[in-house]
Length: 140
Image 1 (cartoon, rainbow, N blue to C red):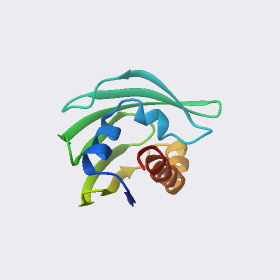
Image 2: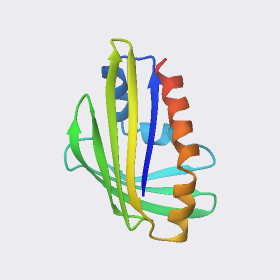
Image 3: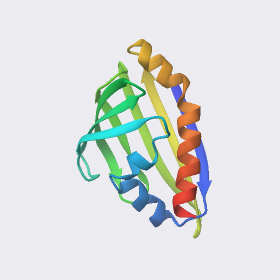
Image 4: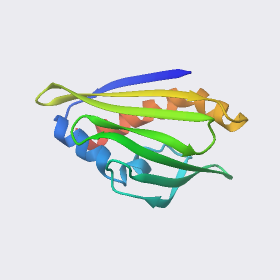
């Protein structure tokens, strides 16, 4: 399965890249009622790991992702090492539209692994709609 979401933010490419590089952005980009507990989130670099638990109400979902293809200005990939999907590859791309506007492109390729993963997949439009809104709120 493949999912893609795009939005623009009125902020320079460098600001968008720095925002997504900050480990606290994951918490900011998680919509209520989702709560994220960080088990171990390493600074974004090639081979770094993000180990966290997402709480969907009373349901804990542990997720471990490996970062790769890290480009300080243009994005990165996170690949699920363990979690609710059979496979998950999320490419984050940042593209300068002009000096004060950036396009953010999220492309996910995944395979279901459980009933929870099907629920999560169905809710990606809500999640990424929130992420676009929150990114604009933080940076504009």
